[in-house]
Length: 142
Image (cartoon, helix red, strand yellow):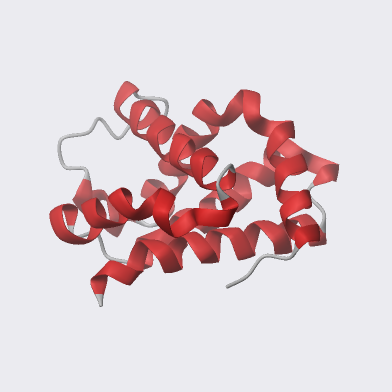
């Protein structure tokens, strides 16, 4: 998957608009995923699953930081996410479908934060970015 120069520009400018809220957005997206897709809870048996819990916020911050890191390294997403891909494939053995489920939840969260700035084209660019991340994170499963 290749992002065009214009898509990269849209991603960068859109991400800048929400960069001050990444930690809370990560927790919100994670909470939405666990609520909407309860089968994903199996990977977090030791977490307090209540909305806003410290466990969800902390892990959500990790997710948001990984997204932020990937977005700042669009020329080398595979290299940037390699360690995370190894962790999820070999140690945690996360079902690859969960990356797509989390992306859906991030779309909802981003739409909530961006409101009118969350246009069809912004959605398309973000969706390509999330697809790229899911692709990179699942490559180690093959």
